[in-house]
Length: 384
Image (cartoon, rainbow, N blue to C red; front, side, top):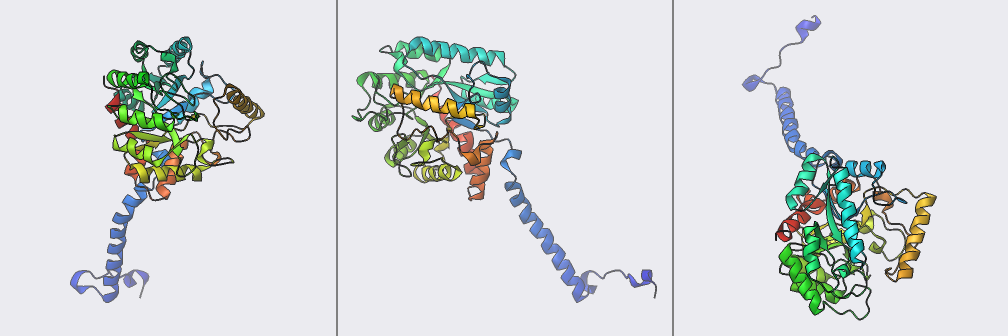
């Protein structure tokens, strides 16, 4: 019998042999399995291949050793490849009013110079516009409220200039209230309460990140709109003045606010923090606040850190300067650097998303953490 004659058609239907039936069943099972596996493979797609909306609720620009403005070509490129749609950029952190105005003007001029790369954000919808057009949205923010002095009308002025996020206090005391490093731990002053109310009226988000415990509690209670802790950690994981207690996190969430977990040394008691420390704080915040009230506020530049001799020296000088001015927090160390070594790529937020996915967090939750929660908060607070 020749080869062709030996290749008889395989029976099908009622005439199929037992072996053929098994083969048909096997093929059908493979097909059904493919339908089940395909969505799982899609969900396992690396987040670098997606385009989720990412907001860093406290981020920076520039490479180590560079001044923020004017932005270098390298810093602009880092921002372009980061996958981040918007950052809360600190344009003022000192009590000097004139310096605050200059900081705003510098940022606005930089955005104007690079309109193909940057977009000034005054409304929540402009973050979505930045994301859609591949630009970086710049939210103007203050890390201290002392520059308003005793004049509430300066809040109107700063809002008119585009400022959308203000911390009432930094680490120390000012006319608004106490920062997290003040041992007396007083809350908002009467003027501070009026300032929070005016921020609500104007559409400026109240950011309680560096506020003391009493000021944080007062800020949550006094504000008629949801508030933020844009960059902090969880005191239940690491007891540090810059980390927030569960009672504060829970109250924030109950009033509709969002906490951004930072990528700073205070994620652990000593030594260089890693992604494991960040995940511990993120997951604790999720447990306390719920998936609708947790985000990212790295407190880092979008540029990866290269530990060159110049970068080490710049960090050492910064730590010494902060200690000299009395604004340093416990544990600031010239040998502990402002980065997570295993999340130090140019697209670190998307790498974090992969880690969260591997730990079983669904895509819905990851997208909220990456940016959707803060976008919702901005919509709720920026309307005058």
